[in-house]
Length: 476
Image 1: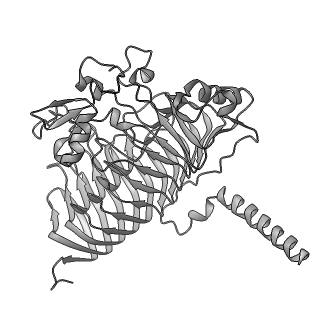
Image 2: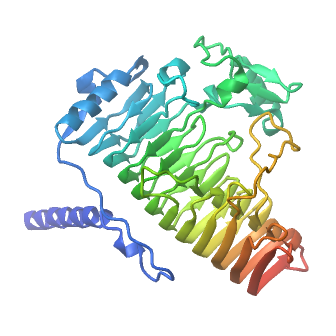
């Protein structure tokens, strides 16, 4: 009996070692690829640790822990890095900045809760257009947020709310927080809140434009996010810029479905990224690739070498999204074996003159969809961003024809969609070759209203073995 116990313990230890080794090796995801995508490389951290409690943090949900958390990060960084542990508790904090070789470990039953005090986030630079992100890093190597806990951006203190997107009960709850109504009561801003914390702009409209992201990092290399829940961002949730070698494995990103600009995961000008085993339920774009104007101080411009696999998106404006900015180009992206349930659109490609670049070498396959509000697949080249308070006719005036979008060499196959308004929508721009060489193969789409809405004069799509079935009893 004793030998069996020893053998069992050895087997458990060996199993744990194998799981740990496998967890750091993501090469097994890069099989059966139809385009060569540069793989991510494993990310590790020094074998030392400290707890934020050693630096005076109290997890009582009342004590402000910003200095203690930042102190733990800074002190460990001076030693070369390691694990900064956030144990069980509710940890009230202002903005924090990660450093190289720091892994922020948020334990199970730990909630990192960002303070409603807007003054904590104000940038010292008077020219800054936005406040500090909740969590940020700049020009760092090896940063991580791991564990099983929750990071909450307390976004209701920042986000405007459209009356048409909430119930009577929810509207009364928002008004009970304070705030002001605009546009004949159709829009609510968190302004002069009853919590007593001061505002940081001259008007609620200007304060709305200052909203921050929950996790926003710049010019970093080797970013590891695993297990943690990111929720209730004031604006976007997980948003790396001009960064390389990014691994997101098993994270959850969530906010109310009606959260204004509540993007979940946005890669902006990032190279070599892997997003797997994650869950998204958000108020705007779900899994989104963006590319802005060229930055001369970095070699990471455009999006390239991205694998997105085995994820679930519940509510989002789009399950997988390109744009609206793709100026420096998006290249070599594989999206496969993902499920979209309840998104507004499924696969969404959106851009416009002034925002566009070349998007090519995309391979999208084995996407399962259900209950899609609008189109299962859509290409749009006249997208207009309409922030809270804008009207439908407030489209930007095009002064110069530059940065024209081009969607090409995109291959979509093995999509099954049960329930959407329109199966496939596509339109380009008259006189410009914006949407061409798009192959859609071996798909089944059950639609409610229209099979296709394709402007064949501006968009060239090839459909092969695509079944478009009306959602009627006779069509089933």
